Image: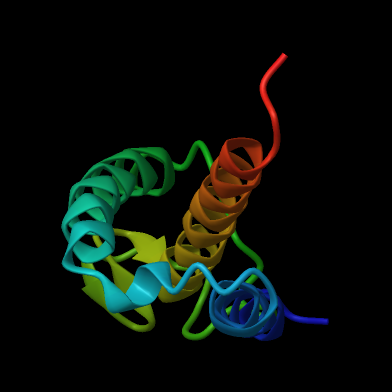
Amino acid sequence: MSYTALAVLGVLAALVLDRAVARTRLTGTRDWWSAYAIIVFFQLITNGWLTGRGIVRYDGDTILGSDRPVLVGDGRLLYAPVEDLAFGFGLVLTSCVVWTWLGRRAGEGPRS
C-alpha cells in the first residue's frame, strides 16, 4: 500500500474516531484548529529540514510526485511530501482525541 493511501486512511480513521467513536468532536472546535495551526507550522519546518537536506528520503512510487525534493510543487510543500501533512494530522488528532476521551472518563468515576 502506498504512503498516499495510508495517509488518507489515517486521516479518515482519525476523523471517525473523533466524530463517531469517542465523540469528542475536537475538529468542530476553534481551540483544536488554533492548536493544530501551531503544530503544523513546526511540522513543516521539521519535515522541510529533514527532507530538504536529504536526511529522510521517499520512494517516488509511493508518494504523489517524484522522489526529487523541491521547495514547493511536485506533490511537496517545503520539501516534504504532502502525505506527511495528512499523516501528521491523523496522528495528532488521534492523540488529542484519546487524551480528551481518557480525561473525560477519569472525571466521571469516583476518585480514590
